[in-house]
Image (tube, rainbow, N blue to C red; front, side, top):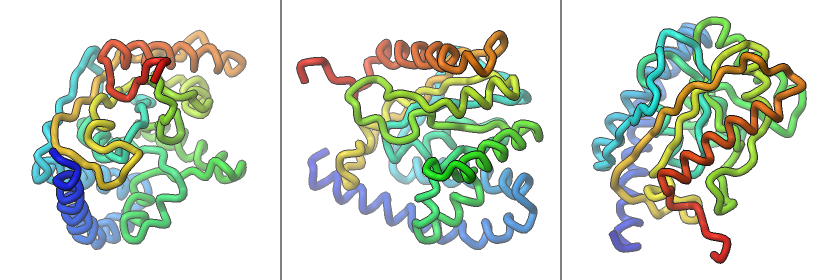
Length: 254
């Protein structure tokens, strides 16, 4: 696909995205009356349908690869690597069999219409505000208590380091230890190829893969060992991304 074709394709994708967003808005308003938990579950289910249709009209072929299966009746702290704007629809293609909430950045709420929808189906966090950050952590713990899994991008923002991963924040690991909830890493392998962070109008069609790794139990770790637990998960995810030879990893000479 040439650069010009990619721009046209991106505009086509954005038009479909806007159409689905406007279509979903009244439904989200209705679902909101059912409360944060039940209404949020309904929004999550709707988002899966949205992702299915959007990927279909864009010609993106998604595949979930289970290196290690998981039990959808159990709670998990799902961890995703963050490399592209396509990570958000991809996570709804990946997590199919259970209710969950993703931790989202507060700035997304500023996007007209979509920001409102996203904030009703996610837990928003402002990392620059200690009080609001603590409130978000309490909300995530409450969801786990009510048998709703959570999804977190532990890198916090796009990985622009040229390495497999950028450094992780502590939050996901603290929550996993405090609630004794296993971590389930999920790797997004192709989103950088579909839409890289350098240029918004660079979307391409192609394949999309999400790889489910073996769950990692927090058992045996305490809050003084968050760094050890975090490093264990980081190393597992980093090595697997290298094994799959993801395209954003640069050699030291580049």
